[in-house]
Length: 70
Image (tube, rainbow, N blue to C red; front, side):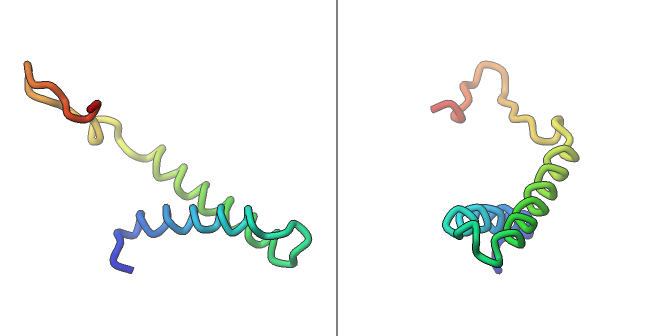
C-alpha cells in the first residue's frame, strides 16, 4: 500500500498474469481473471498513450556520457 498508485496497478497486473497462468482453464474464476487482466492491461496502455514523450525524455549535458547504457 506504500507504493505509488500506478506501481500498484502495474504490480497487480503482473500478479493477475501469474495467477491466470497457474489457474486451470476449467476453473470457475478463470474467465473473471481474464477480464480483470484485460481491464488492467487496457488501463496501463491508456496511461502509456497519455504520457507526453517530452516529459519522459532523458537528457544529459553536452559532452557528458549517459550512465543509462552502462
